[in-house]
Image (cartoon, rainbow over all chains, first blue to last red):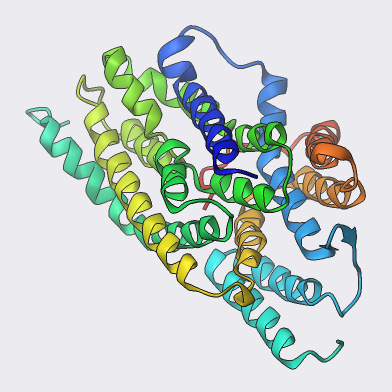
Length: 110
Length: 241
């Protein structure tokens, strides 16, 4: 992807995000949100984050790779346990990265 | 109620003061986002521009993840906008409190709108009598967050560029999302949304333009709403951190 391409993607997101932030503050000050849409929107963050997390642990070089020699999977599972317990970003990040680095250095299943 | 209403200056610094403790959480997140931005193949100025133009952590991280996966431009834009849809809810929730604020100033309110500025201001407005200078509390809070975000991501961009690829720092992106996702799951439909979207994204990853990813996300949200019952009242998430 060229810098030019990324620049226009960024501008698209920037303008779109501004319009959403401004929506009820400046444009439709008299509208209210349809309740069904509001309920759907409430689940989008969880759905999007999960759809980014799980493939990042499982998919390597374009195909699903479920085995211990894919170090991101065991490291990811450790991080899942830490995240479920602490519900905090920093411990999750530290344990997950430390686990990946140890496996890469030790290479027990390679 | 106090005898005299607070001045713009009082309100601004009350906003700053309420927001400073939160920076313990915001700064590391900004550092991570900056470091992740540095893992994407783009010039440094463009990485800095992300924080100024998009100014939303989770969306910035998701964009880097998808840019690294070489996803189609339209899918990247759509994904980031879906993540940021919650700002429409914040916009709707905060607008009634700022009805005396001129439209030109409200555009700045909109640009600076974040999870934390929204949450802190709503709490403040809920507990204090109406005041035509209400927006100054918001600006104190939102500008503190904006400044810390720009500084934190800038440091992260330089840090990330200095560290070698063998550190696999791109793995920090899903790990950060993992730390964010559990507090957002409040009920059983929430678990379903995550499971359907996560598994669906793996199964559909071979589809062109990352359409499998978007399909999985929408399927997850629809499945959650479909099984929602009494006592599963979904609420607006307060933090994306």
